[in-house]
Image (cartoon, rainbow, N blue to C red):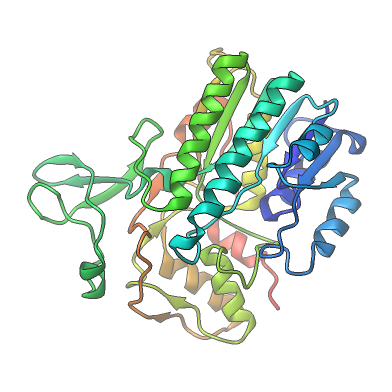
Length: 361
């Protein structure tokens, strides 16, 4: 099988390539001459010009094509002889401001549409893409009086007064956060989230019109070796890691009580390879277009993460700042039962074990 990995020079991409080569899921899917990576090596992601990524991919024996998924020529060349695509190329994170909107939409949605169109022309029938838990917005909440509710967006005024917890839109009382399932309504709260919703729809349309197989993996907060550093688009684990590298205390926004699910990049890589091989689910149902939550199954707070990263290296204690980012959600944790039941995947790395395996400096 010849496999194309877009964004394969990135944090998750390198782990996926390594997993494909090592064959920890059943058996190796691709010999080294059957893996091709398409990556633009964006300067705001690859601060060294992509030198370290090139070295890693060369060591794994993967062919690197430097190009953008919006470039028809580069995509057509990269798809030559390809049987399946893992689509990771994207502009990620909350970003730096509303002026990022056009770049997010162009990179994530125009790029995905161009790729899917080229796949249809090349008769490539298998597609797995990275989506995100951010498609759910504020997640799942229970009101003691009204049951399951979907809270309104948190306002700048409320956040600036330290009112971080969402309230019931019907009675204004406090809510109990829970695990969201894939059948929940999507409610994106920022530009990145909106582009991920659109990507899922594009993948589903492609699958229906080409009779292909499209799977979207809704990733939780991914951390692990190779996390991007010192970029405004990095995740919270990367931001804490960069602070500790500088000998500074991790700065925890809001009150540190935000609930998340931190999943190790090695588990995420296994999820992509598992999804790539899933022509049918374990119940025998054909896989055409399907979304799966991918998380560790363990709920942690942002303060839990900051403490878990600081303590092993005897770093400074995390500092709760009360700062906030408009567009961040308060709690988002999801059930990963569907991918376990249907594809047989589950996470194996705990937060404590995963953080202990990180190297700093």
